[in-house]
Length: 230
Image 1: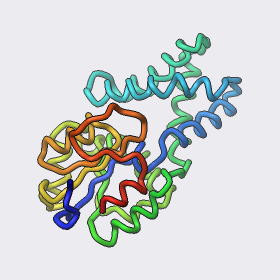
Image 2 (image 1 turned 60 degrees about the vertical axis):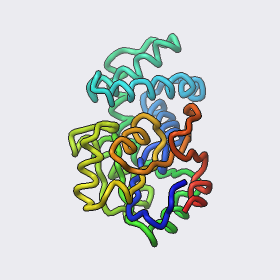
Image 3 (image 1 turned 120 degrees about the vertical axis):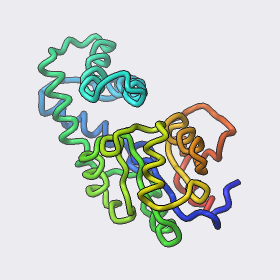
Image 4 (image 1 turned 90 degrees about the vertical axis):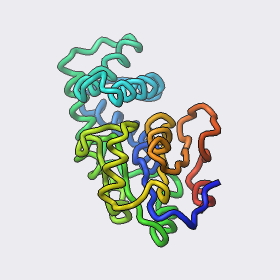
């Protein structure tokens, strides 16, 4: 078990950890499809889109595709799987509207504010995210959590994506803290947990979207459960 008394700094992932990506994404697509006048069954679309999106983010983390390929292909593959014919022009328009609207939705996981209020009194809090710099800052501002964090490290700004060692090394360097007194909390075993542990940090896996069980570090399934560890 992690001894909370030795911890000085807590690093959080943002999407799927504090900011409820799936809920906000669904609301965004609902608005986008209305704007482009596309009669898509939202529930069916999201059921296909969400795993495709996760798969493309993995490719993006591994530097196998570009940001533009991520944004376009996750949509084109979803429409292809649903057997819906959509032109490249419309897909590009949907992609642009999605990015424009996404950060305006403020929904957080249940217990986020209570957790941050509690931890903020005892620890220094920071964000390490693979999300795009401007979008992530808008998400934090619009959901009312920006003030809880001293530093925000985005892959776009640092130049490396989790689980690359350099983004964790940079975060520890800038915050002037030690890996041995730091915890990374995130939803991705590969990006957040293994990336942090490889640098000597502690980790807690907030398993918000059904990743496989493991014994690498503590696993929680809600932020209220997470709060109880501190």
